[in-house]
Image 1 (cartoon, chains in turn cyan, blue):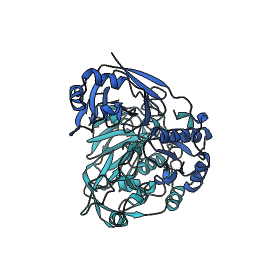
Image 2 (image 1 turned 60 degrees about the horizontal axis):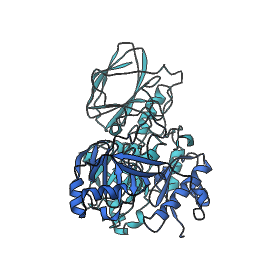
Image 3 (image 1 turned 120 degrees about the vertical axis):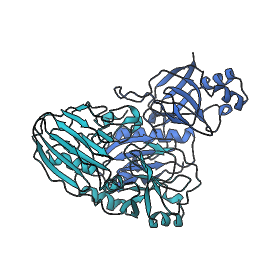
Image 4 (image 1 turned 90 degrees about the vertical axis):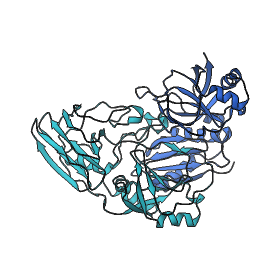
Length: 294
Length: 214
């Protein structure tokens, strides 16, 4: 097992979340940076969707209860290390992004809930890890360590989007404003969503829309004209118009944008976006099945 | 019936929108389409979210691209909903203690007695139009028009789990303690969401719900 000696301000177990439980209102949840979690798993020979540690804000310290291979991954960090039983490891404070990931060979063996080991605090599934907590490890993986491909360009200030389902409700000047503005990530941003600030808001349509499904990466424009990008724990439905949706390949870039960090959006076609995904490492869990639909 | 419109919801989902705004008739088209898509068992499809006037289909774009899936789904949902397209939903009777902190305000603002508010809230079956926002939350409609009030001017920081609430033409039950702006008229001890249960949400789109005063 892993003992938490000193916990970062945020530390939790995550995998790739719940891809097939939205009909019950469960968000996708899971890792904010799905690429970095997947990469850390591949580096220790795990399945890409094994459970790992996600942390943010500050550093901390862990102790490993047995010999283990460890990988740490995130913006500016990509290392594999071997630890003896009793070895202690400093979790560095994320400095080049918001979230870092630590995978151990065999993954973390916390109980599965609805097919995922992720932490989703609003529904009381899992919890934020504190000093003194322990996390069980799975049997060491026999898989061959692999080097992940297709690393996100975290330093890029450009986040690519496809037009959202309500794009047509926005005027052309509003759409251009959205694409040409430089946006800053507001302090009011968490695992549910990132609020953006800009010099001139986007003119939001007056339409009163019936609530409908939202998704991770959906860019909602509330009446104040300041966009909100829904993130991993974002609500499954919403009533604000969605001007655009961040493409899956750039969600890690969006997730790792620090408070105050600036970005611009660039439109790509749905064909380009899906072609990019087919060319990169598997980012999605293959576990979703029809049998899990209620 | 005007044809529904299909559009991408990012690179991992698509949304079908029926024209005409909120009505039970439109929502029945949504439910029929959801049933047809579910029954087709398309291998790329991961999840379905039926809502008031929309059906969103989440899929794995490594198995199917948008164009191909949109065409296939368009074929599946062609034609108006028939009776055969409606597998019967479940019926839930939920026992409620009508002692919510907003009950007397609701009575005053609607010009009804407290007993009349309770009678009108318990006096009809509600359809589950949408499940989501937080796990297990269900949007139930339609409320008796005499009970229709806008949301509270300022939302509460914390609404207790199990609170039975109304707002606009809708009613619902808070599954967890969350912030909320609806009027609280009662409470129930029924569990709206339990991840160890299958399905985890008590209410599913297509189910019907009736409240009973205890």
